[in-house]
Amino acid sequence: MNVLKQTEDNLKQEIAASTIKAKLANEEELPEIILEKPKDKSHGDFATNIAMQLARIAKKAPRQIAEDIVANLDETKASIEKVEIAGPGFINFFLKNDFLGEVVPAVLEAKETYGRTNAGDGERIQVEFVSVNPTGDLHLGHARGAAFGDVLCNVLGAAGYNVEREYYINDAGNQIDNLALSVEARYLQALGKDAEMPEDGYHGQDIVEIGKVLAEAYGDKWASEEKSERLAFFKEYGLKYELGKIEKDLADFRVQFDNWFSERSLYKDDKISEALKTLDEGNYTYEKDGATWFKSTELGDDKDRVLIKQDTSFTYLTPDIAYHKNKLERGFDKIINVWGADHHGYVPRMRAAIQALGYSEEQFEVKIIQMVNLFENGEKVKMSKRTGRAVALRELMEEVGIDAVRYFFVARSNDSQLDFDMDLARSQSNDNPVYYVQYAHARICTMLKQAEEKGLAGSETFDAALLTAEKEIDLLKKLGEFPQTVAEAAEKHTPHKVTQYVFDLASLLHSFYNAEKVLDPQNKELTGARIALMKAVRITIANALGLIGVTAPEKM
RNA sequence: GUCCCAGUAGCUCAGCAGGAUAGAGCAAUAGCCUUCUAAGCUAUGGGUCGCAGGUUCGAAUCCUGCCUGGGACGCCA
Image 1 (cartoon, rainbow, N blue to C red):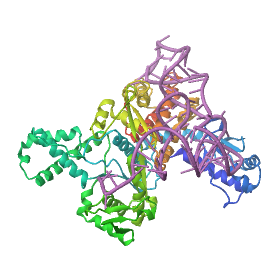
Image 2: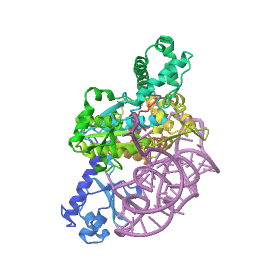
Image 3: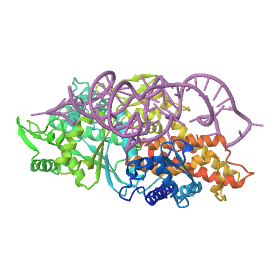
């Protein structure tokens, strides 16, 4: 149950009814009633700017309109305590706090489902993320994409969308051939032979590892084998090895996929020629300079793109178009791609392809994840793919812990660059927001445990009317917001709003904790009410952290 | 040259489907542990919201131009 939403809807309805009753506008003219939560408490629980919006339609001064609306309000219907007109014509509503009393029972009843809504109405959304080439370790940037994608999916799921997570495996094409060549070189080197890495080879330590493992397992067996067979074997071996490692790293990072989609299957199932045929039938292709081109400029791209190269092989784009066609054919209402900032230039051509395939561009969305800069000892840590010295996700998890990494990555908007401060993430101090939130949860757990030990828990009857302290009201209001916060984060694709929310809630809890004593044997009624409140806060913090994928410890 | 993202307090960032005196954390200063975990709390100071125009009753938020930082502009993936 979403108590706050219900209250808001009631109020909106009442404002609309009053406006019409006051003959300020008829039903068609009536703009959407917008209720906002004022930053300043003295402006009430909700405020509306309807009077300003109506100024033109009703041809009256906003303040006069506001007065007319207020005069026609049925205050009992919308549980209004007090109404004020302020500033240029804002109407501020102060609600009776009785609706707040329903929040705690609602949370306690919903338990781990508190925060879930059906805002998404079962809309089918597929999110494709990470999709790193299986040619090396996951590094910092990938980790941010993984955390963002995962939390976005969690949030969408909680808001009633039907979500599917997918990883696209680039197991065909050049990069995989390069992987085979790199493995070959490392293998030969492990045997003590003179072998040079290919020009575009993968220099990561993991490939060196593979070479060693192969040398130990097979000796020089493959050195004397024919090159094509050797490479074919190395390709499969390398692919399996790299993919296995990626999957393991992600699983340890608490990221799971519903589907791992192989690029090769597109070749196998003839999906690429099908896609090409569709483009061709739509008259979106042409031949030039011995290559086949996609007329993407007709659909908003900067320049046309090659689909089939002179050497008859495909560009990266071609199987990718087939892949997106396949995704859409699976019946998703919307597909979301999470890409690194270095791929943003790729968006217009893919969007063009979506349309050329006959789909609406609104079904296709790309979330760009900006770069991550790593700082340690106050200095920027340089990363480079070529030297293979990028900071790996594995390393990060081991150094600072999964909770901190995940929290930091989803604390910021995806389209801001992120400075990741190793020292801060690592520190077990009050500077670290992860601990701050977790500590709030642990604190409550301790209180609840003591309540039981002292025989104060269990039989309490909850009387919301006893919760009158300012800090208590603040907590109740905040708790009531949670379902809408999650729904908004889902709708706007802004998972960081959940992080912000849980931080704010933790902050209110700490503040309350320092101001009021919960366990008071002298006052069992109040203690009972407060214990119930604490339980509700604990559940909500745990649920929010759950969405972020961070643990909620009972003790710290 | 074209395109994308960012520019808000000393630092890192929220806020941006227009709304009232622009927020948080850190850092700074001053306080709070015989009391449920001080990994906490309270208070104070700190801002030309990059710059210049425009739209509007109202702009950090929308539009245009410019400046700065980052990224992208392959018959690579």
